[in-house]
Amino acid sequence: MIGLQAFNSIPAGQRAAHRVTDPVQALRELILAHHHEVDSWVLLSHSGFEQDLQLAEACPCLDVVFAGHCHSEHTGPERVGGTIVIKGQELAVGYAVANRSPEGWVGRTARFPDTSESVLPTELDSVREQIASIDAQLAEPLGRLVAPYRNKPLDRHALLHELADRLRSGLGSEAVVLNETAVRTTLLGEVLTNGDLLVIEPFDNKLVEAQVAPAFRNDPAALLTHLTERAGLLITSPDPLPGGLTSVLTTDYLADTCLGSRAHPAGLSLGSAITSILTNGDDR
Image (cartoon, rainbow, N blue to C red; front, side):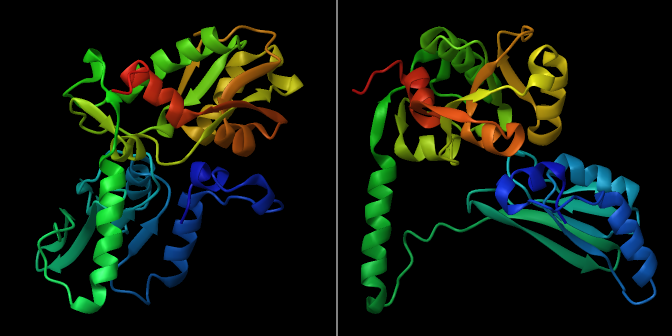
């Protein structure tokens, strides 16, 4: 089952003529039709962890919800009434398990084990070499981290605020709109590596200048509501947005999936912009 945000993440051309059915309504109809045929209800969801908590509350017949969809830092397990909501760690870091016990369903999360010391058959030597090569590429440094971001978990909210302000002033845009879920948080050290950047921005977003639909140009509150419903929390510069906007600097993801407007490349990737903020252009 997917939610509205997950549906809207599908490129517009691929979801043309399709529509979303309210997940709660769909679940209730399914349970009502088949409640006499099953022993347990386990939902595989792509709605997002927070939305899945609401699904569990609205549909108490569910026993387990395996929460999917990226952008959520929560993994659980979290109990909502008699339902366990649980999510494996993203980017192939870990997984989630649910087991039936005499007391009911219980859930747990776990990390995949470190296989660096495992012994592989000689037939897999080439695979080991490829893995080692990728490890070396991920460890390549991109620059020394500036003090505010050094040796601490990344505050993605603060990062995107700083980024939005710099982009607006540096590129001369009317406004910048970024979704907070465009980046992830991670524990940073002294130096930013390729691997760190891949964790922070795994989506390869490009920055574009997107036209604002006439219906939203003099109603920035309606524009933000429209985008928030589809992409989650937003970071804007300026804040609040002014009226009379004709274009905004944003990601190609937001432009393609939520604005549906013509967009012109800004010649900069989100990852490159983030690297510049975190290292202040220092590539040493």
